[in-house]
Length: 208
Image (cartoon, rainbow, N blue to C red):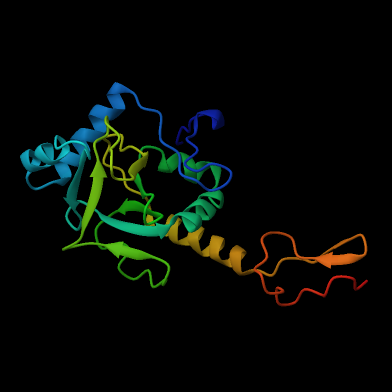
């Protein structure tokens, strides 16, 4: 039987408002992450040289060999992570997760070719001929807003595409579901953010 960490030890990749969080860093985890990234690059010496170029401390690493990468909007990735069970979150511990704060995309490395038939317009898959910006595990980059959400632990584990697809599908279904009307005082309002135009299906204020 698999042994899972205590709930309080599980990493929280996103804050309650959906913003990605930086992981806790230990020397052992940083060493493991650096070794995993170096093994993913066909020319480790080039990787090391790019990482040493100040002030960015980032390098381009090719996808399509040891892994592909699934790119999700940050909001969708945060919503999908909320759909994961405790056991699924525990199984994802130690798998690499990256975020580009400029593009607001989360990149999740998965097994090569495993996400080829995803078929969701909100999801982009990076594979052969694609490159991913990876910050140095020890030194957050300056001038580039790429960041690690979860550092690889050196085990080589990657996220399970089947689990990701189910979580994303559940999150998108929840986002599309109509929100219930809430009566308050003398009016009817729609909970949550409402665009400037009156939301479809909401009664005009003042109706009872």
